[in-house]
Structures are given as C-alpha cells and as structure tokens.
Length: 430
Image (cartoon, rainbow, N blue to C red; front, side, top):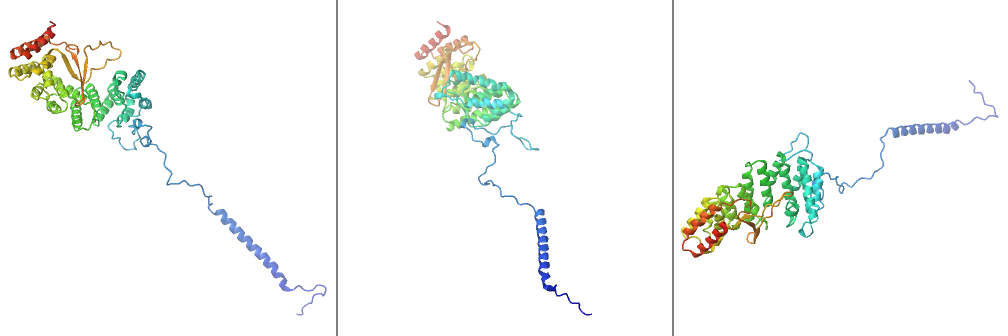
C-alpha cells in the first residue's frame, strides 16, 4: 500500500514535538497527586502544640494547708495541729481527746489573749478585766472550745500575767486560766483533757489546778495520778530541772490528797524545803503526818518548824500535844524552841502558799493580821493568820489543857514557864 503524501503547503510536524507536552502534563499530574497526598497526611496528623511556659519544679512548692507547718507570728501563738483535723476514710483517730468540730470563736478568743502586751510584766486593771471576760466567753462555748484549748496547752509556751496577775485577772497565766476553764466546762472530754495534760506537765501550778479539776469531776478517782505527778515533779525540782519555780503547789497537792504513805517523800523533801515539808505533814488528813513531824524534831535543821507545827496541831489532834508533853518530860525541847511552841499554840497559824483570792461579787471580810513570808533557801513562800482568823473556831479549852500539861512537864525551866504563861494569857485574853 502506497503512502499518500501530504500537501506541500502543510508540512509534516516532526513526531518528537509532542513529547514535551505529554511530559509536562504528566509531571503536573504527578505533582498534584503528591500535593493531595501531603495534604491528606497533614490533616490526619496529631497537632504539635506550641511550647508553653513550664514551672520550675525544683523551686516550686505545694500550697501549705497544714496549720502546723505555717510559720507562727510569735512563739506564744505557734499552733499545733488541731484535734479536729481530717482522718482518712477507714482509719480511727487514736488521739485521746476528740470532741468533733472545734469552735473558730474559741481559737480567736485564745489568740486575742496571746497578743496581750504586758508592759514591764504588770497587767493593767483594764487588761485584767479583759482576761476575765475572755475566759468567761471561752467557758460559755462549752465542749466545742476544747480543741482550741488543747492546741494551746499542747505547746510548751505560756503568757504569765505578772506578780498581780491572780489579783487582777483571777489567774496567774494564760495556761493556768485555760486549765481552770477546763474544770468549769466539765464533762468527760474536759476530764480526759485534764488527765492528758497532767501526764505531760511538770509545772507545779498546773499540777495543782489539774488535780483540783479531776477531784471535783470524780472525787477520789484520780488522786493517785495527781500524787504521782507531784512526786515526779518534786524529783525533777530536787535535781535542779525546774529552774527557780516555786514548788509549794506540789506540797499542797500532797497535803490535800495524800496520806501516811506520802510522809516518807515529804521527810526526804524536807532536806531542801524544810518549811514546806513540815507544813505539808501537818496538813495530811487525820493527823497522819504527826509521827513524821515528831521524828523531824530530832533534826537540828528542821526542829524549829516541826515543833511549831506540832503545837499548831495540838488543838485538833491530841497526839500532837501528847508528843510535845513527852518531849518536855524528856527535856528534849531547847529553850530557843519554846517561843515557837507558844506561837503554834496561841499565835499565828502557818500555811503553804497564799490565801485564796476573794471571789468576785462576794462580800468577804478582809483578812486581819495576814503575814506573808519568803525564804530564799528553796524559794519557799507561805503565810500566817492569827488563831481564829482562818475561818475555823479554835478549841481554846484543849489548847489550854496542853499549856497546863507542858507547864507541869517543864517545871523549873524559866524559859518554858515564861513562854507558856504568855500563851495562856493570849488564849484567855487576860
């Protein structure tokens, strides 16, 4: 078959001229496929966020939520964890005192007391009234105030109210006031808290107040605990671990709640606190300290106060008078001691500490003839009132009988006769 030639006017295009067009179209198609593929992949990918500001984990600290870890403004107001802090589900709060939700009001009132500024260690009359009113408000809240009281008492801090604090504020310090508030609030939770504090304090005033709280709430039930606390604190004091604290309240606890079993402890303590020991022995119930007092009369360092205490007791306990008479018969009373016997029989009557303060609102007659004493040796503080001015009616007839027996036993002793005649004149008013 012959090939038909083109006309000369339309020259034939070379066959290679179509390749660039097809190539261009193919390349474009390929690029479109690639672009579509890339676009689909980009849409399905997880977006990568922009870098954010990252906290410095080494220097950052968690927010403080535990009150115990917050810095206190002053040493007096540093708070312990409250007894009402949260307990994990399924766990039991093992703390000995737990009374439910505490009172923010009580915390505020106690905090107000801790912020008192006592210039020169002396309260003003206005501050004393403020303290009394605040403590009454705390008591009025009842058991819900106990967690706040427990928090303060759980710390080894106090705010003393100064020398006239008891007179102006009705209590000697913040802790003492809160302990007295426990007794006024009453109830099993307050009783438990008093026992808890008693087990952890060596302060003589606190032990005395806590012993009173326990005795008033449950007479006789916790006397041994109070006596053990007093004995242990005396041991610490004798070792010099209570600084210069007055240990008189400890002797008062032993005197008030103890019996003859405590006499050896008092005799041992007499080597350091002779006046306190003899007065406490004289104050033991039912005259149970008389035999120990008789023994102390043989000690030259303690016989002055021991003889005087025997004479002071002779109007109440015949055994005390009989012991004096026997000593006179045996010529065992030195001349210098007859004046002390006269004082005990017919003169000032001695007691540990200081008289109880007047109760606000009650008309109490002033104590005439009150004398107070301070011995630097052992930091001993006591007072005396004339016979009959301590609220009791003296048995004058029994005291006069002892005078007569002593006159007979010491016949021929000028010092004894002169002293005993003075005692007779004082007792009879002649």
